[in-house]
Image (cartoon, rainbow, N blue to C red; front, top):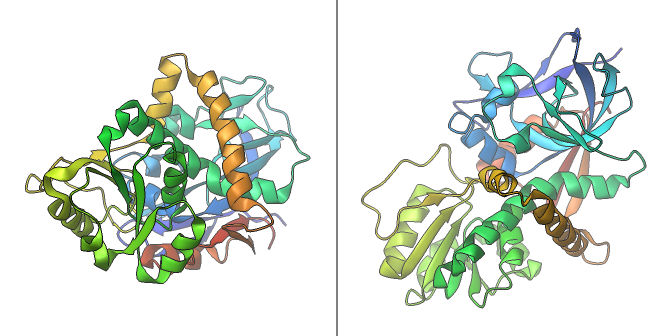
Length: 364
């Protein structure tokens, strides 16, 4: 008998998640039912949760339980039931899903390459989160896993580097990158390699060896050693941690040599940062990759952007996921039972950054 289930996260304590059984869905005309094949969980999912109310992520997949939200994840799914003429059974897609076994969608704007989930509750969020790209069926599972893990992260790294590059890197002599063991952080370091500025990693003591082994940073420091970084160099802070105390220390240390504070993620925070007029130097600027992608679309540059992005993503995946010396070890989980434990590990920072967690929701 087919099981319908999903993981729901307690909004007031994002380290707590429950596996909830659901009734079998009854499709309305125009809807399809997707069986989720493979999804990835990374610290990026915690960022979605931290910004869930502020940026509308909780609206995408409404939760059953009061006070809970459905944390989004990226992955692959197959349409197993359809009442939408343009999207037949057997269609395979890549996109944004709940941590679940299935998802009911209402396809709109159907093309030969993609469709948009036009469900009413999904309006008001950037297009990229509602778009599902059609995928071939005969793909390599390992490559699918790497795509599920890295594509949503690397595209953030890539567009953030574009943002900084378009502004002349703010004439930085060094980039200081927090939460440097996170995939978005070292993806950003990789994408910033064309700048002459040094790429300085900030990370926890337990992750020093991993970060140094990546080869994407000029130097690596643990958080306690922030003051060992040269404060006389013009600096751009690339903030993946979202940690308010660390932000204050960074601003105080670099002072008027801090040229820009680019807030990208929140691996070490529990909420969206509040404005703080007492900070020394420039106020943090939140970078939202989805808005950058929407800007490319509005300027008619989407196709050109995606052509160069896919080329560079392929090169990056070959480097981090190659079989000779990969930066990541893929760990597949059968079913969703392990998801609450993995989420708790992301929340408390105990997860091994060298492991990529892949869930096969209907495998149990």
